Length: 215
Image (cartoon, rainbow, N blue to C red; front, side, top):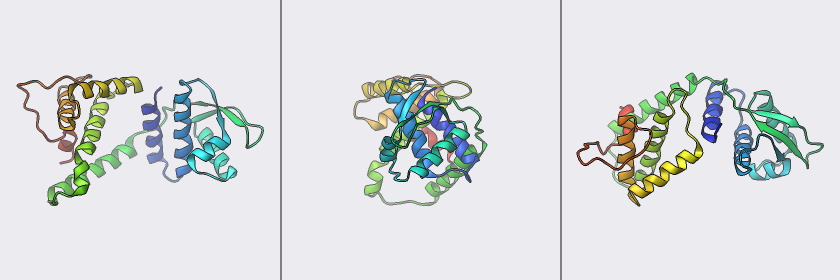
């Protein structure tokens, strides 16, 4: 179990059940993941009510507890021990939820990619301040493409592995986002589970790998 898997399962389930979810559900669940991570991924841990409410910006106890009970009912959180009052902690555990289907999310992503491709092909914008950050966003998308390739089938990747890959990218291409993108594209195109320095004879297109799927 890692935060990437939990996040993916949550949003798969959200796309399949849009009539049930509210922003407060996502806020509580992801704060619970963050809190568990900070505690070293304990199998069960205390979730102080007032701390969570303060962190996610919810003032009503009833709003909070109703959403928490929903997460328990839906199977994302296990209630080990209920708090005695709103000022004490519930003892909970994160469920390794694996019942979500990906059809709705996959369709939404394909639809978004198609629209994005159409907009890129049909609009020739001038370079502006918004586009100055383009390289960074391209890197994020290239990295997501690499992670998606790594996690195909039943394969998983830990948060530590992701951290090490980013550290290696920084070593291979310090302060060079464009080269990092090319390195990631190289790994995706060759189905490599790690990143390596660019081959001199390699003719990798400068266009990010994820864009090829959007056209």
